[in-house]
Length: 357
Ligand code: SAH
Image (cartoon, rainbow, N blue to C red; front, side, top):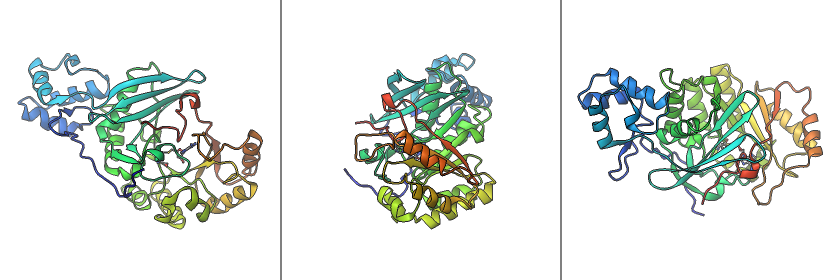
């Protein structure tokens, strides 16, 4: 597997690779205004285009029925509507979960998952093709890093999934393939587009960005005062254990990560969520639970325990009894504990199971 540096590689939003047409999905309202103006049409036409793509999730440019045909013809000369093409749509046999396989314009594949849980319909978006972070237990890591997704490629996952399901998507998590904070600019641009009140209009508190712990980017996120929720994949009760399963710990030390989590809390007033993937014999003992309480107990936070989804490697999910006893050790802790029983493991749509050839 080829190794890449874990520095951010910024893919410009324009996404025009080698004379390819530029996708309209991914353009901000301001950008659309300048495109429309350049084509000789009044500014208000941009808002119409914006609403057609982000609110009505149209498939083709010529579906914009109240936009002049001459503008649509000009737009079609230089632009396509969607940066992604849907290749496969797989519903789970067991649960209300569906997985979508898309290709980007240059042919690489990405996956997106939607799952229903009570009144919530959550979409799990990918942010990169592959991942450079190399967490030992994650299937995406085995692909290595290929490239960053543009803001349009991230938002288009939402648009294309929403038009194919009758369930209104109520929540968005950036927890699919990739490390969002190694594609920071595009992820924030995408979140801003998903949140835009004239477009998709998803509330900021219904958008969660999950990071493996890129400390400078967590700090930047806190300092820029974004309104989105933050989740941090902790996965171990101490630094040495974390280093063995998440080598990123050598670059971004656990103390610094905890400090950055606190900075997020202080600047936003929101509790960061620590995610803790439960791996049999690695981080699931009662002693581990106690160490975890020591580590995060004084930090205002939430804890999300994720029983491991197997990917055919060396790690295993603990038994039900082991999971229960780990959780019972977390009774009466000063933070809220939730358990994420991943959905759609029969179609490899669970956390950490996303990977394509
Ligand atoms: N790179 C980001 C987001 C993608 S992973 C991050 O690390 O947060 C989303 C979540 O799935 C993370 O908390 C990760 O620790 C968890 N995860 C990865 N592989 C898993 C697996 N096989 N089973 C269960 N959870 C897994």
